[in-house]
Image 1 (cartoon, rainbow, N blue to C red):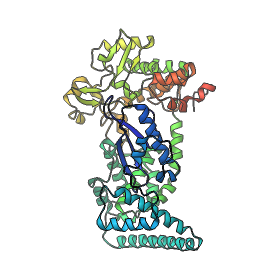
Image 2: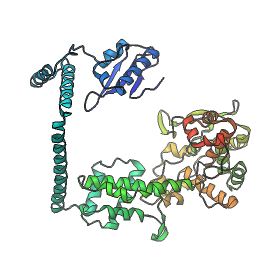
Image 3: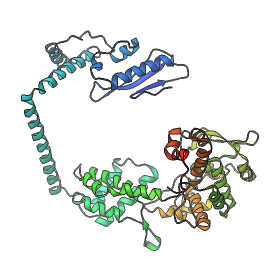
Image 4: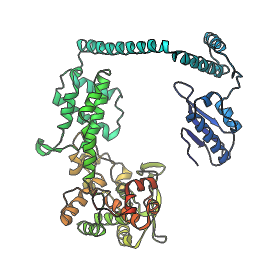
Amino acid sequence: MKKFKGVEIKQQSTGGMLYVRFRDPRTHPKRQIYTTTETVDMGIAERIAGELSGIIYGPTEHWHKLPSGLHPRTTQIWNPVDTEIDDMTSDQALSIIFKQLKNGLTPENQTQFIQARRIFIDLVNKVTEIPALIQERDKYKHENMLFKAERKRQGLRDIKDGARKLISQAIADYFDSGACGARSSWRDALKGWFKRFGNELGMGENIMDVTPEQVAKHIFGLRRKGKNGKDGKPVGADTKRRIRINLATFLRYSTNGNFDERRLFTLTKSLSVQARLETNTEWVWLEPEQATQVIAAIPEQYFRDAATIQYQLGLRAEELPLLQSSKVDLVKNQIHIARIFDGKQLVRRLKTDNSEEYVQLNKAVMDAIKRRLAENNFLLFPCDLKFIEPRFQEKITEFERKHKLWPVPPIFDGNEDKAEQGGNGYTFTNAFRKILRKAATSVLGNTKPMDSRTFRRTCARELVLKYGCDRAASVLRDDVETIKKHYGNLVASDTSTER
């Protein structure tokens, strides 16, 4: 099925009627239209969708007078009612507008009203292009802008002089009101970060007195919580950037839009650059010899097998803890990467839609696969309870406990170090990354941290160099555009192992 800008083709059932969905640019706000193409032929539906897309993003005069040669159904969809007012004058348009505003709009006369209003607006626009009126129009716009600015300043003064709202109360109201769109673990994390923000500025201070400079200073000074109440390592730039966005949203909500977000983003604009630099300090891939050395240096057979399978098959780190023993077919030499269900209830989802697929096994992973199958577990890489803090074990369902499923991403109250210490839902990727970094440091002596995706990247690099981007994308179950974006430069010439 082809894709068209601004127009989507839908089919409610296999072989059923085809529909199109788009937003009408002639209305404000843009009204969504979802209607049938009156055909089950995909070719005809694609023609209609293409013509609608051309009308929407083509010359605006085509909105009112359609070009010739269109499919009849395209004309019907764009102009559902034949109003016969193509030659309507401005006087007739004005008469229709007043008459229908007085008597009320009905589905029958709504289209006629819209076209009449459009003709009248076109006339007004032409009038305002007269040089004598341009100066008057611009003067009005300028005065209106000054009035709004003064009103905003006056409103800010009124709020500051009026009821006092404490930072502690503002934080509680923000999360209780549902204004915070964050969910699950990130919502709990934000509560922790906001609490630290309030403690630093003073929970008893007025939220209206908070300045962008104070917020910027707080963000740049953020550090993780270390042991024994001491400060730990500085928080990463990407995490600081996310906290900045959420603090700005919180302050805008709590001050009725009077907090100067633009000033805050100007003061902290270096975070985006710093985040990219920090990301690039991680190993993007290894040489084959380095990958073999790192795997051999992993002490636990469990994680050594995981690293071998990821490197040889190019699996995502999030897919490793979901590999099910029952999905391995040693006859066809393949494994089906699939979601985990408890009956009909989805228990664990995959990271992307491209993840669910049959992956061919090669000789290099057969020993590791057979070793994992010999343990007769539901998962090839089951989770030991030692990875889960005792006070969180009671939250594990019977199905999760029986099949030794790895927990969902961790919940932490502004303390990300707990994930490294095995607290609050220790995930497979946390454990895997920690093991890889220790092994890489012992054999390579690198000071740059390994990532849980390093072996997938290493596999991708080797596939691209050997077979090209298209074949690599197929093996990695990824989009060709994504592979070309990250590895396309390797096809022309090999590059260094570091970016």
